[in-house]
Image (tube, rainbow, N blue to C red):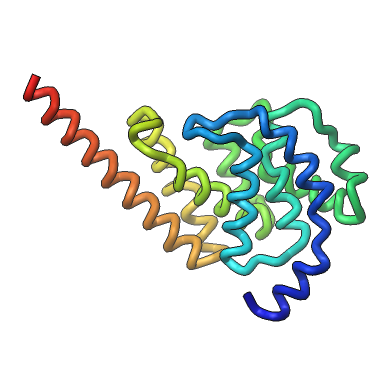
Length: 193
């Protein structure tokens, strides 16, 4: 970490956002754990890529609250601190609306999203792909998720961060390879029986 990053992070007041993200503790993930831990994973990915923008980092902590829980309101987020209104706006950019299909949601971010929205969606997708394993998820879900990533998220990464693009492509390659391997193992077991 560079000195300027350290100085910027020293000014980051994250506690109110961490507290709001605790509402995600009860929202479990198929891979185990919960959405609260996923928020920290997304935050860590942003730090790993040297993002120190306070709005972006705060939003990463609560990026799933409006999709996954009903106990957090717009007004609560906007009143958290001086950044609250901007954090809320960013979170809403990456929140799927009730009338949106998943492709429409991702296309909206790709076409109209701010740079921070695209960066946050890339970090979120890196976290999700890291947790995407063929022994936990249905093969068709994995195929669909990888296709969505290729069509919508890779172009976002290409636009905002070449290193994230590289990691996303690597994760896709590993997940596709893992699926092929699990299919071969399953076929071999079936032949033995």
